[in-house]
Structures are given as structure tokens and as C-alpha cells.
Amino acid sequence: MAIQRNMDPKKSPMPVQDPQVRRNNFDEVALGYSYETAVNEAKRCLNCKNKPCQSACPVQIDIPAFIERVANEDMEGAYQIIAQSSSLPAVCGRVCPQEKQCESKCVRGIKGESVGIGRLERFVADWHREHCTEQPEMPTQNGHKVAIIGAGPSGLTAAGDLAKLGYKVTVYEALHLAGGVLVYGIPEFRLPKAIVQKEIDNLKSIGVDIETNMVIGKVLTIDELFEMGNEAVYIGSGAGLPRFMNIPGESLKGVYSANEYLTRINLMKAYKEGAKTPIKHSKNVAVVGGGNVAMDAARSAKRMGAENVYIVYRRGMEELPARKEEVEHAEEEGIIFKTLTNPVEVLSDENGEVKGMKCIEMELGEADESGRRRPIAKENSEFVLDVDTMIMAIGTSPNPLIRSTTPGLETNKRGCIVTDGENGLTSREGVYAGGDAVTGAATVILAMGAGKAAAKAIDEYIQNKQQP
Image (cartoon, rainbow, N blue to C red; front, side):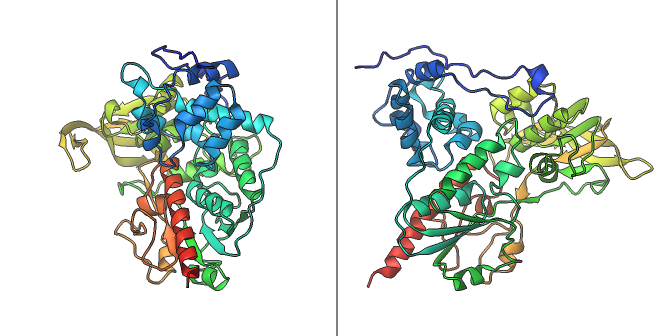
């Protein structure tokens, strides 16, 4: 029977916790579509034959096909279509920047709002988790071994795709818990950790082994992984080394990197009563940066009891790189945006702790090489922001441990591993890399796309070696 299309120009709104309630808890902010809302939203999709949305998806999900299944109320069928391309659908449905990718190409967005593709992906993944009890079928082993470094989104994606092809895959994770940035970086209120663990359990059920507390470069080297019988290695170790501004006062007590601050809260559960990890309970917090990580740190600080939390960003609101939804949620929760502002010094009290941040006002000049207007300091515009905590969220770079212990592995001046681009092949035979270890800090879905491409290339590499 033909589907009666829903021609409403606006997408179905996502129900959320009240801002005044959620700013005091770490429960998930977005509550998810109901069954009826999901079906109604799916009927807004025109099921385009040329699939412009799919072309903008880094993991190439057949978006019109899965949405058509939702419109026909075949939720399990929709899940199976997504699962063919994505190993982490419940994660992507929550944190993927769909508005800049698949939804930006949606035909419905030309004269109205795009279809809520991300919201539908989340609904389908959650429906499957709540209703399906069957274990996935174990793939037939092909006799080949591959090692993956890093249990973040890139490594987990590569591991899942290779395991489905029959490879014996072992993932080596430096931390005590798998998930990478999904568990240490993204807060519970955006991505519940039980959902991440369920996705990881799904990978384990198809034969992926995950060894934690394994710091590659210390416990084992890449050369030793090959000696253990692995025929290829994929480096998906992320970019966990924080950047700082190198301004006076950055070494004071009360100055955090966003990585450290969020890891203490997300991985070590510092927000829970009786948590063993120390963290400062601040009154006035400045978060320097304008990306999603800055929003996560600021919103976490508010939930940790801070009275005033400032986002300090040297460009304007229009230039903020964070997702629009995250900015809106931050504003609703009372985060104060100090845009066109740049820190120049962190001020100290007599105990060596932060007592303020000296800033300078900025204005936007001509566009720079990135295409964004360059911020220029205004003369005689210095002022002091009254804060007791400063969190630096201006980016990260890869940890140098792997490159310093792997002879012949080429890296660039930023410390990122150099690859051939398309397949993730490095300067070492049989060694592939992708995600933030190659690009520097980027999005979860781009890291997943790199893991997917590398898995395909690794399979072709190993299979070609077997040919006479």
C-alpha cells in the first residue's frame, strides 16, 4: 500500500528535559521520539531515488531505505539496513552532526526543514535495543588476524567490519574501559554510557576481543603486534593530547584541559556523591573555545554547581563551530557566551590558584585561509573576567607515544599520522590509520568513516597477499 506522505514543512520536534531541571542532573537531555512521532516523521521522506542524503553520510547508510521501513512500521527491518553500514547506530543518532552532513542534502530542506534523519536513526537503534533479544550470528572465521589500536569510534568500526568478514580481531585500548571519546569525552547527558556499552557488547558478540589497560608503545609495540601473528594493524588511537594557548598563568591550580575535566566527570564519575576522583567545585568558570567539546565542558560545569559559566570565544556567534543544537541547549541552561573575546593572561591569588582571567576584545577582519574572518584584537580593550576555574577547549593532537616507538611511521608537523587518504595506508606496510590520529580532533562519524574505509582496504591487502 502506498504511503501517505507527510508534507509538513517542519520536522517533528524532539522532546527534551526542561532546562531548569536538566541543568541540575546528568540524565539525557533529548528524550527521543515516540513510536507514532517516528512513523509520522518518516513519512516526510520523499524516498528520493538518487539518495542525496546517503552521498553525504561518511559511512554510506542507505538512508531512504531505512526511513521507508520506519514509515511502514518495520522497525527491525530499518535497523538491519542501518547495521549493514554502521556499527554504532545508537551513538551516531545522538552525536553525529547530521545538519552538516546527510540532512544538509535532504530535498525537503530546500523549501522547509530536512527530515529528522538523526532522530530517526536514534529511534530505530533504541527500538532494536529494547525489543530484540536475539544474538547476532557469529561470522565464519577466515583464519587471519588483525590488531586494532584504540577502542574509540574509529577502531570499533574497523573492528566490527573486519569481524563480519571473518577476521580474528583484537582491539587494544589504553584506558580501563572501551569506547574512547564516547566514554571519556562526551557527557552522560548527551550520550548515556549504558548505550555505548551495549554497542560494544554487540561487537563482542560477533567475536571482537577487547583488551583494556594496553598502552601500545609501552606494553607492546606495533612491531610486536606483527610478531604475534597479526597480518595488519589499524591505528585508531585518537587525539588525546590537549593544546594550550601558552599564555601567562596556564600552570595555575584551577586551569584544566577540557580532556582532563571531562574525563574526570565522564569516565571517573566525579559528579556522583562519594566519587574518588578529585575535581574543583567552582563558582565561576571560563571555557575557552567554541566547539562541541567547549559546550560539553561548559554544560558539565553548570551541572557541577557553578553559578556562572562563560564560553570565551574569539569569533562571533555565527562562527561557532559547535552544533547548533548544542549551542541552543547551552543557552537554555544559562551558559553565558562571551564572544569576540580572547584570553591573554590567567591571574593568580596568593595561593597560586586562579582568581581571574584577563581578556581582550576582538573584531573580525578579512577571511583567513580557513575561509573564516580573522579575529583582530581591539586596542585598549582589556578587561578582567571574574573566574576561579579555566577550562581550555581549543583542540587536541595525537599522543606522540605510537609515532615515537614505530620506526618508519611518517607523521606531519602536527604529530598526525600521514596516510594515502582514501584507504588509510601509512608509510609502513600493513599498517593503516584513521580518525583523529590522522586528522586531528574531528567528529565521531568521520572517524567511523575512516575506520570503515581502512577495514575494506585491510581486507583487500590480506586477501591479495594470499593470491599466488
